[in-house]
Every structure is written in C-alpha cells, then in structure tokens.
Amino acid sequence: MEKYVLFILLYFGFILAFFEIVQKPLFCLYNKSTNSEKMSLRDLWQVYSHGFVTDCIIASYLTAIPVLSVWAYSHYHFYNFQGWFIFYNAVIALAVSLLVVADIALYKFWQFKIDSSIFVYLKSLKGSFASVSALYIVTALAAVLIVVGIFFVILQLPVLIYCHIGPFEAEGWLLHIGTVVIALLSIACFFLIIRGLKIRPNNPSVAYYSKNPFYNHAALNPLYNLIYSLSVKDDFEGKFRSFSDEECEAKFKPMFPNSGTSEKLLNTTRPNIVLIVWESLCASFIETLGGQKDVCKNIDRLSKEGVYFTHVDAGSFRTDRGLVCLLSGVLGQPTTSVIRYTRKLPNLPAFPRVLRDHGYETMALHGGDLTIMHKADYYLASGHDTLVSQKDLPSSAPTCKWGIQDGFTFDWLYDDIIKKTKENKQWYTTFQTLSSHEPFDVPYDRLKEDKIANSFAYVDDAFGKFVDKLKQSPAWDNLLIICTGDHGFNAEKPIARSEYPHIPLLMLGGAVKAPKQIDKIVSQTDLAATLLGQMELPHEDFVFSRDVLADTYTQEFSFHTYNNGFLYRNAKGFTNYDNVSDTAIEGADAEREEAGKVILQKLYDYLKRK
Image (cartoon, rainbow, N blue to C red; front, side):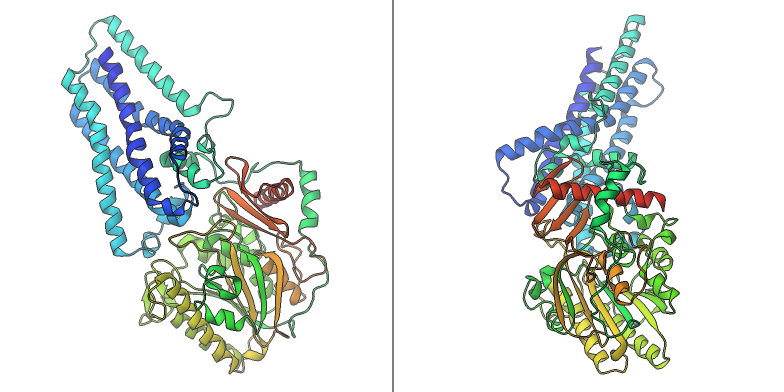
C-alpha cells in the first residue's frame, strides 16, 4: 500500500511544484512592470506562503481522478494504465497551460486574475483576436506549447516512477480494505483542502494579504479563481449587503438628488445631439488634464470653446459597462455587467429613449461589430431606432482589426448630419469609436515613435476635422456635440488606480451659450441627468445620475468600479476598496468606505428588481 500512498503524494506534490516553480515566477516576471513596488525576497515569500492554499486546492482537484484511477487499476485491470495517464495528463496539461498563459498575458491589460468573464469575450473569436497582432498570437501559442510540454512532463513523472517501482496490486481482503480506506481518506483530505476548515468555505480572499493588489494577484492561483468565479452566480440577489434597507436608503438619498434648478449652459432646449464615445479616451493623453503633450491637440484646442468638465471619472473599466454608465446613468458593477442580462435592458432608463419619446430620430453608429458584448441589444433597448455598423458601411472603407477606421466613420457621420439638417429633422446619434484600441494600427504617423499615442492622435485629428467642418455648415447653430471616453486606459506601464478613471467630458457646438470650465468632481453616469436637465426633460428615473449643474448638487463625488472593487473620490481624497479582502487598498477612510458600500448595496438591489 505504501506504493499507492507514494503515488498520491508524488502526483499532488509535482502539481504543486509546477505552480511554485513555473507559474508564479512567470507571472511575476512577465508582469513586473505592473507592480508599483520593487519586489523584495520578503514580498516573494509572502506571495508563495499566502498563495499556497489555492495551489493546494487545484492540486486536490487534479489529483482526485488519478487517485481513483490507480485504485481501480490495482483491483481490476480493465484499462491500459499508461495509455490512460498519457491521455489524462495531456488533457490536463493543455487546459491548465492555456489558462496559465492567458492569465499571465492578459493581466497586464486587465489588472485582475482570469475569471469567468473570459468566456464572454470568447463568444466572439473575431473580437477577441482583433486586439492583438499575428506575432502576438504566434508568440502566445508558442508559450502555451512550451508550458504544455513542461507541465505534461511534470505530470508524467509520478506515473513513470510508479511504473518503475512496480504498480501496486491489491491481493487479499485486507489490502482491498486498506486501499479503499486510503482512497476515501485521500478524497476526504482533498475535500477539506478545497473547502477549508473555517465556518465559511474557502474563496479567493484566502490568498489576499497585501494592500498592493499585484501581490494578492500573484499569490492567487488562476485556475482556482476561474473555478470559483464559475461557481458564483452573476445575479444581484443579496450582494453587498452592509445595511438595513431603511438605513441604506436614508444614506443614499442625499447623495443622489434628482431635482433642482439647473444653471443653463445651452441656448436651446432642443438641440440636435451627437454623443461621441471615444474608445479609451482618458486624461493621460490630454495636456489640459495633466496628460501627455501634443497627443490630443484638438481636444485641448476645442476645450476652450465649449463646456469642459475637468474632473470626470469613468464608471467602470470596460466598454460594455461604460455605455450603460453613459446612456442609462447606471453605475458599473464590480462582479458582472448588466448588459449581459438582456431581459433587464428594456427596464433600464436611457436618455436616448427619452429623446425618442420627445420626437427625436435616434441612431447608434459604430464602425465595428455590434454583436460583440450585446451592444446591439443594448443600443436598441436604450432607444436607438437605427443601428449602423461595419456591415452597413461601404466595403471599400479602410479597416483595422476592429472594423472601419474612425476617420472614415467621422466623414460618414458628417454627411449624415448634413443630410438630416437639409431634411429639417430633429435627431440624436451615439457614435462609438474604435481606432484607439489594441493593436493601435491606424493610417496616421504623426507620433509614429509611440504607437499607442499615435492612435489617439489619429482619432483626435479626425475629431478636429469633423468639428471644424461642422462649424462651417448650417448644422452648427442648433448642434450639441458631446465628446467623452468610455473608460480609462492602461499602457505597458499601467497608471495608478486613482488616475485610471479620469476621462474628459466636452460639450461643443452652436447650442452652447459660452465657453466654461467646470471643475466639480462628477461621475460618468451624471451625463444623463445633466443633459436632460439642460433640455428641461424629466430624469427622475435615473436613480444613479445627478444633474451636476443643479443647485441640489452639493455632495461632489465620483464612483468607479473595477473587478470586485471600487474607487470613491470626493474633495477630501479617494479610497480604493477591494471587496474580496474587504479592506481599503489605498486611502482608508471610514466615511468614504461607508459611502461606497451604500452605493453598491443600492445598485445591486436596484438591478435585482429590474
């Protein structure tokens, strides 16, 4: 029986060795640029010691079937022992290696561990691969093959050792009973390792120990995080409960006033409107907001001609969330995205639907594929009568991997505006851009030394030309152009979480009375109520959107969510709060932490009822 026990220990131990010797060092080395601190030996020890539990959990999952397989073979020789393990180990090596390499490669962009959201992106392979170059894909596949080979050899070693010393064969009733006991005890141990010995079962927080998210993520086993995320339903029932309903409502109500008298910045209540949702546009590329010089020169130039909001924070970190923040005024969710719940979408408020109900002709324009991430579903549900995407535009248009380049789409939009002006129509359009996105291939080279900045400069150039042409057209006098970002942006060296959400919000056009800079702290979600307030249209249904130009807007703050965390900012500072470890990573402050928890409880309760 000692051979059986030896095999179990070897198989379990060699899986642990893979994560300790291969996975963790690769993760830390490849993503070291995302770490804001220099990792010391003590930090490395902490990563290993705190991540050991989740590594053991995965080793338990992967060892359970081999334990039963060896037991079955020792009693009944009904299968090819080595053939079976070659198959099993090959499948496990491939699956684990794919996830490990994906986790390592995506972390630099996502800033969180791989979880069930990966399957949402893989529903559209075209969209998933559009953001990377062919060289990147080839390199990633090569990395996967190398890791597969390493892990397969590691998994095979216990099998080869077991075969070399002679497979155990149970002969006699005592050995039969003994092997049954060993198998049952092994499975019981695995169950205890997976569940844990505390009152509540293990969850990813067992690996969380540091206020530096990188160390927590380096410690956490990627397979465990994925498996755990699959076991958690993406519903809204009972999530983030910190207060009674009455207490939560009492704290929430003064934070989100939905009435008041607005300061009028427009010279008409019924302008024609185009909302430009600029992919990843953030303060990092705008000099007037403290970003790089000479990138978005037209934003900087035109900011002096319109209403310029300088302290706006994006509601979340992905386009699917950003669209809902902008059009519905609904805050981003840290554990899911409401756009995936298509049955809820018609029940969400949306200002394009309000405009349509007041006589506006509404359209959504995007040069790419609107089937990705339920965007078509949401645009229709939010009140857009017409959808225009890549398939509706000329096949001769210049393209990138995501679709038609923004320069062409801006020109198409200009022609559409002129046409509607001649027809004397009242209209609203949402234009979602795409060129300032990985792989950042654009027909422009002013900043060719910096591919990423050059892509933003390209869109900025197209935007500036678009505005300047409209100034010379009859459409200008009754036109309101709103330009903002869908979320922030992280380059090769990601910026701090406190800086990431900072995006511009610029209102231009003949409908604007006079240039004005507004330095209030506001959220991306406040656009809906603020715009409707300027148009003297009702916005009481927009529970999480505030008219920041109203006299009732007295509590200035912004709220941003990322993967199971939130950032709450007010005039006194900001708090970055991690929901998994239930602690503030930065800017610990009881008042801001409580406010963020109030908002999350109210948000999930609200979405549960939709």
